[in-house]
Length: 247
Ligand SMILES: O=c1ccn([C@@H]2O[C@H](COP(=O)(O)O)[C@@H](O)[C@H]2O)c(=O)[nH]1
Image 1 (tube, rainbow, N blue to C red):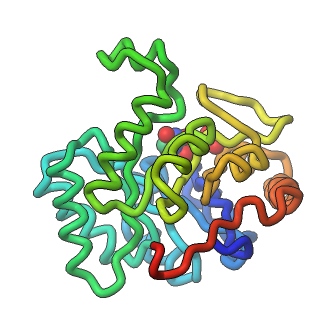
Image 2 (cartoon, rainbow, N blue to C red; image 1 turned 90 degrees about the vertical axis):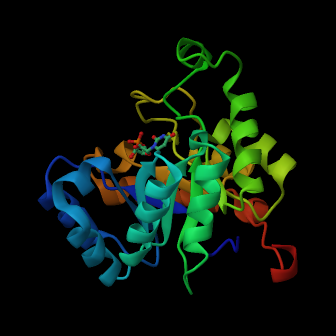
């Protein structure tokens, strides 16, 4: 990914639509992308997504579809109709579900990026064991990442902690989208697998999803600028541009 492309995706998680619009009015689509997730989508619906797209933002619609193949494929097509830049599904939905989503989006001239959620960044090994998946999160992430790549997805959501291993195993063109990003001074909250912005990019993340460290800051724009400054200090280490032939 060229180092000049905005890496930060601001998660617009707000209890009030007006608060999301207020922050959007201060953000620059040339500097960051935005994520609309379950909270804002449930409050404001597709009309808000279309408005934010019209305002020039690359929108990651983070609804984490997880259902039977036919339903997920149709939901992905509906998301694409909104003009979003990225849409996601749960990798644990299985190979047929992933393949159906891929096949449906492949019918479009300009499909959004299709990304698979691996292991939620709020989970640690004990949480995984509690839901019947004993083992290290990194191993499960890699297993699900391979499944997603085999099904032709464009990348995965994982924590920055797994980015290095996945990057090494699956190559430079596979997009790694990492929530679980916390500047050194920020509260961890419910996230269990975290790294700083600089560490995430150095580990191989393409896109950093950042919510509360920006949206919950006293001065959200100053918080975003501090993250950008931290990323600038990483320099070209995160530039893994690939030729079309290699991608
Ligand atoms: O594994 C995942 C998948 C998605 N998310 C989403 O990212 C943001 C993170 O927000 P913070 O406030 O920076 O923790 C949020 O919208 C989650 O739904 C994730 O955290 N982990």
